Length: 220
Ligand SMILES: [Zn+2]
Image (cartoon, rainbow, N blue to C red; front, side, top):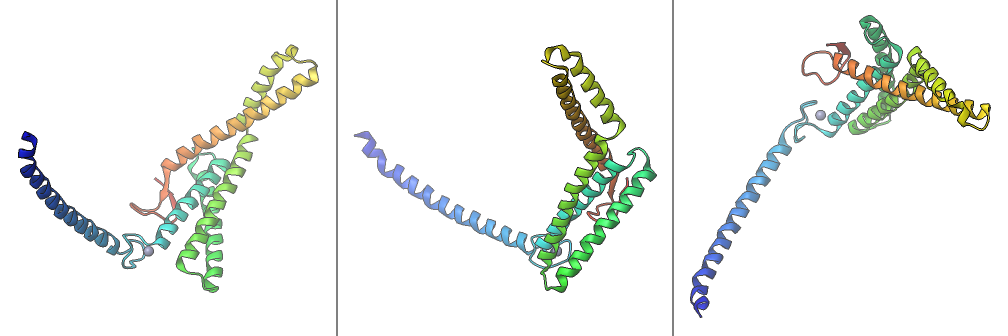
């Protein structure tokens, strides 16, 4: 019964380990709690409100609204401007950005007058900006789909399908299929043009000033 002989000290050892790990756990919890309190106590970097964990909800929402404004403006430029022509891009950026900011400001003023909270005003701004991204994207795709590059791709797709016209029952069937292929090529080209142009513009256009997360866009 050697195991019984050893059982006592081993159990005591485990109990001691249990007590000391319990104490350790309490200390870890206390430190985590203190760290969490310190984290929550940091004032907002945007408006200085206390106990904001570094950024209050309203300022965080405004930041994402600003990011959406930037995306909407650059998407408008990607659709309407020659991306390599700085003054052309600037013209569209200034126009799109001032129109969108005016819309945000007017809507914000209206809801503020109705007693909206800062969080609600910021949420409305973000919603307007998100909608602008969607509508800018739709118009940019429509413009690019009717541009020269997309038209050329559509013609190529049409011609390629018509080369296999003998595989269709009638010529009208072949033309319908070719039209469909042309339309798909047109839309695909518009989407890839938009994403190429946007990635160029995103690297070149930033909010003015180093470390600034919002405000008018300026070329890098
Ligand atoms: Zn804030």
